[in-house]
Amino acid sequence: MKRIFPILSAILFLGVTVYAQSYTPSPENLRQRAEFQQHRLGIFLHWGIYATYAQGEWYLQNSGIDNASYAVAAQSFNPVKFDADSWVRAFRDAGAGYITFTSRHHDGFSMFKTVTSDYNIVDGTPFGRDVVGELAKACADGGLRFHLYYSTLDWMREDYPQGRTGLRTGRRGDRQDYESYFSFMKTQVRELITQYPNLAALWFDGIWDHDRDPDFDWRMPEFYEYIHSLKPELLIGNNHHLLPFDGEDFQMFERDLPGENKAGLSGQDISSLPLEMCQTMNGAWGYRIADTDYKSVKELVHLLVRAAAKNSNLLLNIGPMPNGELPPQSLDLLAGIGKWMHSHSVSVDGTTSTSIPEQPWGVTTQDGNALFLHILSPERIPSRDGLCKLAVPLAKGMEPARKGAVSLLVSGDKLDYEVSRDGFLTLTLPVSVFEDIDTVIRVLF
Image (cartoon, rainbow, N blue to C red; front, top):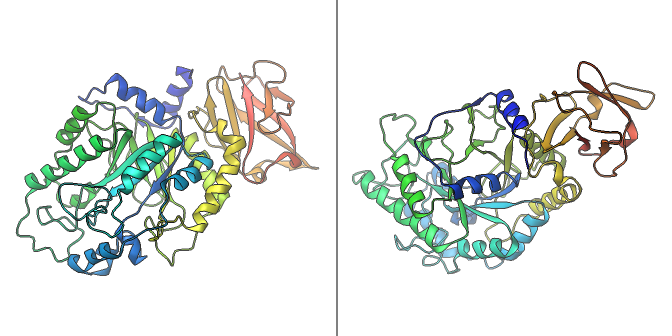
């Protein structure tokens, strides 16, 4: 059971914007939101026929190839080494609680069976299998939540009102009709909801395509109302880089932690909804053969921990290869994250942020009456003669409850401590206790 006071303190500390919505989520939806926040690590998967070009998911836009030539890739898309169960095992072993898979990206190709056209993996490729369906089943069998990404823009369809991208793909532009396109999206979303009963969330992307046309009406509240009429508990998020719209259930941040905007895509305020930030393991979302600049296990774990400290999930992306396998570098990183999560997951999963600001040495998370100190940069703690003195500013009511209430998470070794009158917890630690990635100290109060 989470305490209300620390959560409210964290909201105030993070500068969360509480905004009014006319949308009233169902009790089942609120339960899904709470479940969503219990798993701080999710796996993002960008996969489609663009993988055959090995140049990333924006190849159609960036290359200047026309859409008819691009679509020929479907005829050679035959990922015979795809094994949904092995993917899910790797994600689960890494400590992930859910996946978000690209059911349809901006190139308009559907990775599921759809009545809207043959431009889909079942009817338009030699592979002929429903990847979304196989992943949905594997997640259900493996105990992972199943989410789907869906692009609201389309570089192929003539009825999509052209925005600022996809202008060189060969579309004539003489049949733009949002009413028709809106009906198409409703049909596909209904298919996703009805064909895959364990679908727990929809992750929309692409509204920014009309950011230079402020009068364009995407009719998102109407779209969301339709989705919730089909499945009230389904969570909806949208990567529009703005405060959430009416009808959305979680807020996302692209390539940045909430409150940071280093990549220039996440300058929006922080809402009171559940939060999620997404980031790549290397540089690209979709498979790009030349992109071998992968982040380290340490960097990714630190990102996960800092996300949890901001009350956010981390959606960590992988771009599968065209043959259906996950890149070996991604599998190695998953194994490394899993090794850390095996002994440290209690300090991130199910935790909330705290009222303690980020410190030079690291961050803090909380689960009920357990406070976790994540020492990410031990070199920033003053040391002398092999000893470090760590001082932590505690909020009122966070003082250790008893003797032995402060300990190293992994070993369980009890630590001596002092609490000053002004609320500082002081620990004297030998340098030898610090772990390579993150030394976690648990304080029970």
